Image 1 (spheres, each protein chain N blue to C red):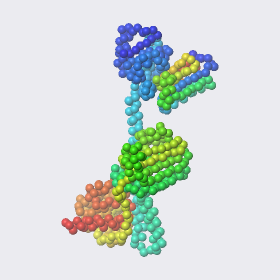
Image 2 (cartoon, chains in turn green, yellow):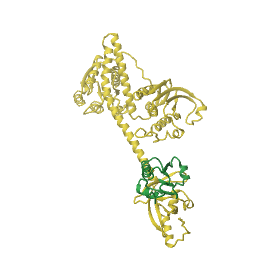
Image 3 (spheres, rainbow over the protein chains, first blue to last red):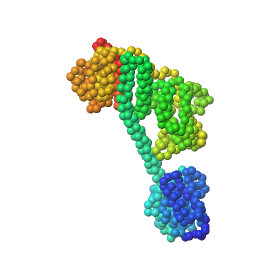
Image 4 (tube, one colour):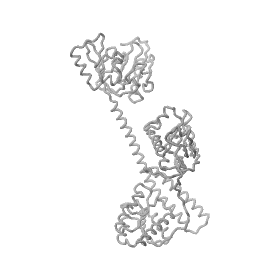
Length: 95
Length: 508
């Protein structure tokens, strides 16, 4: 499950609106990245209500979605992103 | 009919065809996603929820729904950019020998919108209740204030009118009286503002309303904000003074909030102008003619076009926390419309905003109170005075006795009623306060009138909402006097009511 340890991770987190739930999801994902991918990741937060075009371009039809663009293959998870274990498993980040 | 697409053409046996048919009729959306995150199956409810055809969904990369025992709140993005609010529960199942993800999604949009509306209405209700509480508090404070002002105004007037004193001292006392009358007017303004008023449209000058409103506002603005005033209007509109006051308050409060961080200049101007067809043509609600324009300008944050388009919508606000109800400008818009006018806004980010309210003018004469100074009218009738405040009942006694009347005073409404029961024919007039312990003035009036229906009664009240002129008339009260009562007013109304009653007797 663990990718090449030097591999750069490129993530896209898609949410709808500035809500408490979404803020918590963003915080959880950032904490996971800081803990497991420190210095090796870039994350883009996209609010689909502000930039709906980006959602369509990136093929997003449900939020919240967390998209792993790199490393390949493309992997996307949809659901409760405040659950650390499930996010780690969903992104296939080794623990 | 649900579509299916597998790694090979998926041959469905009879059981699977039956299950597919059943899934078509399920209320919730069902989406099956394979091990690569691609959609393999959608039912009819899913097509409706996503607002897409089966061909647009089957084979599309959806992603892996997170497996959880509890449903999770999510949003669905439709083709037209709109959102549906849903909750999803996902599990892993065996699908023809392959492990797939089965997501059951319920559309909760209507429920969520209803809940949001309920929350908005609760917030609105809480705000209204706060305002009502403030109004009640203001009414209570004003009542006490009026009781304090009554002897100040009353005795000062009494001394000016009756004492033989140095003209220099008289001038000083007149200054005291002027200041006390200003305080009285301020209390009346606060009560008018805090009291619910109906749509009592009448001819009025806007200038004094704006001047008084700015006096109130000045006290609430920080030192970092400069106020510039230009009140040049001399025209009359047909309107409600309280509502015009509210327009000013709401616009100035918004301007103040826009400049809170860095201070600035608040400019308020009131000017008369003629609007020509080239201007009114853009606003179908108004016609060319004479208008008064109220302009409220700030040098605050400013707004972009997308915000400006929404500012008059109810519940829209850019203010966080307890500051913004989103109703201020919606209320202003409603009031302006009710007055037959329009409101426009211009704004620039970083430069500030300008709100212009155009109100159509009238040719009618406005009511203006003129104080005519003339000698106080005298009399000799017997008056029963009732007020629970000893200073006020003593003041009224002294004023009326100086004018020749005989008086009997009581500071208890119960004692006054007992006295009246024994000697109702002894009195020619009752002057009673409204707010008293044990028995209010209106109740006392009703009791006295039941004993002697022709006894004229004057009720003095602190401009509270407990009694209106109509209600007083229905009870049989002849006049309502608002505290603090000037000596001249007390003398004038006493004489008027006695004369009217005396005239009735003469005609009987």
